[in-house]
Length: 75
Ligand SMILES: [Zn+2]
Image: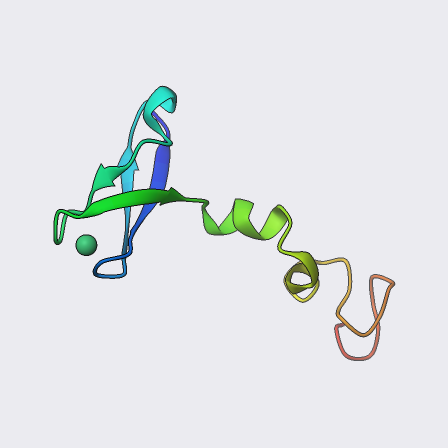
């Protein structure tokens, strides 16, 4: 089974859970305070899918001040 990441907004805790894919978007209970917690995207997919300009400094396609793959400030 794949691992999904969940976030409890009550105690601000993140935890991972093994679940079947059909249940991945269901709310689950926080292991700390038992509040309902929603699934969050993993760090990898959150950064690779549409966080706009924030991705530029995290990938290898250059930095925010250049459009090529290398410049004085990023490589
Ligand atoms: Zn909690």
